[in-house]
Length: 240
Image (cartoon, rainbow, N blue to C red; front, side):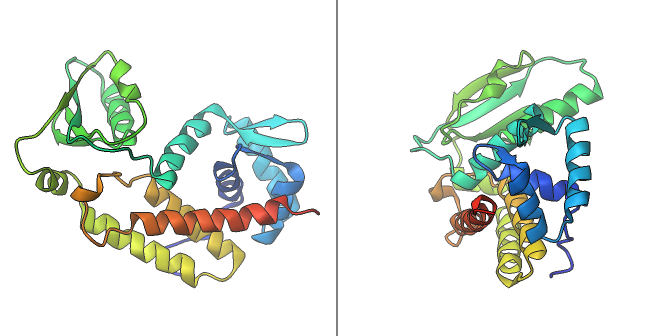
């Protein structure tokens, strides 16, 4: 296993399994079977499940577990990266401008996380933007501290995108993770590499093809993760 991808803890195994499940619920038997497959003993798995419920990450239902509210939101963002939620692009850009001052450090940090999570990049302090090519509606537009716009930049949009995102670094990291998943043989190593891959996909800016380098690996990474999820789904859903 590559040294920069550490094996997952029992808690991370549980959350990774449920974050990849659709709908986001698995029976206790399915979780136990998958845990056995990646080397997590059933007793250890039960402890991890109990702690995840206590923390609000999971909710029990009759016969199994499902994601709690916070992780349901995380799954939606993860799915956006995995499923490639692009639509036809008309050349316009989303823009969000902070128009309220005097906010606390915690409030500023929360807003940065919200806008980054919506795949916007900061053009300058308090001004965030991205191409308006995603099918999702900009939920951040309801935030009262923001004014939102659609705009068309005067400069070359590919040059603007290259300033806002370090695309070569993202692509290089993605190729390395893809190689790690391909080289992993042990089930625990494959799950750890796949979890690393999907975390990387959540930071894919999902730019229009015309703004990306010619050898952009986004689609290849999404295909590899989807294939792994099908592999894991077959395991968890098989008859005991």
